[in-house]
Amino acid sequence: TTTPSPSPCPPRRPARFSIVADKELLLFTEDGVYVCDAESGAGFSYRTIRIRKICNAAASPDVRPIKIDGQTLFVGQDGRTVYELKYDLMADAIQPNDKSVLAYHLTETARIVKMAYQRFPDSILWFLLDDGALRSMTYMPEQVVWGWSRHSMAAAATGQQIIDMIEVGSVRS
Image 1 (cartoon, rainbow, N blue to C red):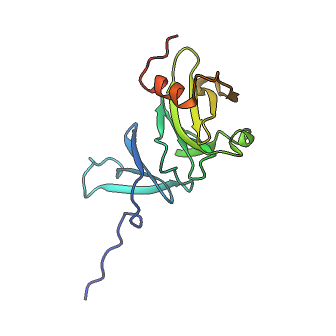
Image 2 (image 1 turned 180 degrees about the vertical axis):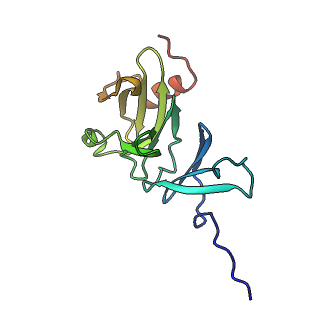
Image 3 (image 1 turned 180 degrees about the horizontal axis):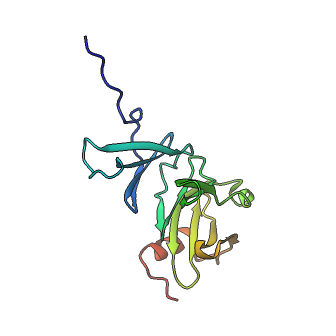
C-alpha cells in the first residue's frame, strides 16, 4: 500500500477575504491569516503552491481588510482589535501588530462593523461601530505614527453617512 503524501494546505477553512500583497496572496480565515505563494524561485502553479499561517488572529467576517501602501490592516474577529500586517526585514516575515492596543476603551461597548480609508489630507482610517458611533485612527506608517480619536456628530449626520462618503470618494480635501 502507498501512504498519501502530506498536503501543503492547511485544514480546510473558508477564506473570509483575500488580498494581494506584493507577490503573495493573503487569506483571512476564521482561525488566522495565511499567506499563499510559490516555492522559492518557482513560478506559481498548483504544483508549487505553498500556504503558510502567518498570524493566529482571526479576521472579522464583516469588515473587509484594507491595503495601505505596503501594509494590510484588518479588524480582528472580536470586532475591537485592529491589526497591521507588515513585512519585517529582521524577521524576514510578515508580522502582525496590534494598532488598537492603546485604544481598547474606544471600542469597549460596541464593535467595529465597517472600515474606510481616507488618504488625503491626513491619512485616516475611519471605523463605524455597531451603535452608530464613529472612531478614527490617523495612520502614517512611513512616520511610525498612529493615533485614535472619537467623533461626535450633529444630529443630522450619522457615522454610516460619513463612511459612505469616504468609500465613494466624495470627501473633498
